[in-house]
Amino acid sequence: MKTRGVVVSVGARTAIGLTAVDTGLAHRAAAAAMSAAPLADGDGEPATMCYLPTIDPFVVGAERAVALGRPALEEALAPVVERLPYMSVELVLCLDELMAQRGEDGTIPGSRIATELSRVVSRVAPKLADVQTVARGPASLGFVLDKVLAKLESGGADAVVLGGVHTDYDPARIAALVSKGRLFSPDNLDALIPGEAAAFLVLMRADTARSHGLLPRLRLHEAATGQAKATVDNEESAFKAAALTAVARQAGRGLVDDGLRAGWMLTDLSFEMMRLYEFQAMCSRTQRLWCEPQYCDSPAQRLGYAGAATMPLHLVLAAEAWRRGWAPHDVAMSFAGSDGGERAAVLLSSP
Image (cartoon, rainbow, N blue to C red; front, side, top):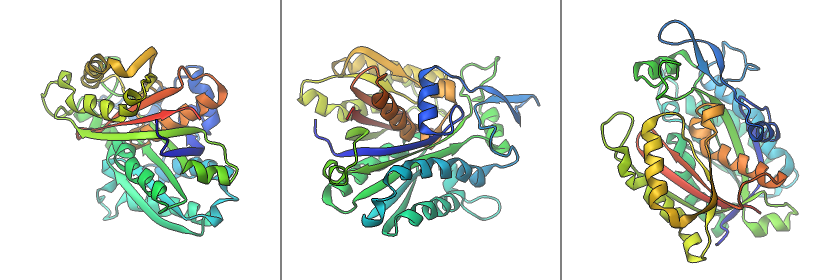
């Protein structure tokens, strides 16, 4: 398989860990972060969600996203801080769709988040050439990764800092989930558990990393995207799974060409049955891509919904697993789907 880029450092902040290492170790130990939050559900009871109690409970919105993202970004930058001043660097930030919409105060939360986090990068990378935001929810990374890898391949950038931030810790967000019947509770299992997370990675070409003495944490091979008809707001059958099947086949074409298979699936599945049905249908139609153990990893079921941080977090978890020897297989595929029907898949492998 062709290696289009490598990840040389990672950083994360989640409800089970304040760093990528903590998150990886806790996830490996099957830690769960669900607890009663200081936010009320539709019945006035504490909502069940996965959140960081270390952040001020009165901080919400863009301010909370920055509080999540800044330490995760700083962690990802720390191992390469001595190299970045000599490189052309870009920052690509994955955000949820709501963060790109203008709020009641007239501001766009995503713009504030991007501004604050770009300052963190520019302090260590004076050649920061561009800051880009992609507000397409959980599938955001898939929709931008091909362009990022193409830019690295062409020499348009020496390094790309890529990541995502997400938080459901907001009364308005909880109210929206309640109104659509999507908030998890003992009486509503066909739902998602709200969460929050931030995850960042530094990407380079393999030869660039080697010339700077940086060891790859994982290799990136292919990204694919599609548009599903079935969404949380319509009655289309999830069992058609045409878009998810297509992106899996497209991302896995390098596997087929080289006679290889993947044994590890990293998904964004929560407990919403529509997405579970879709994933089951995709798996049954793409068996030529998979080998034992066909291990399916769904962090959102224990860490909470991660929104736009989903796929960056998948890559962080994979990097930590390969680094420490507990990954179930050397080849993995990351899947994510957004509420608007966007579907994405990324093929990655151990270094």
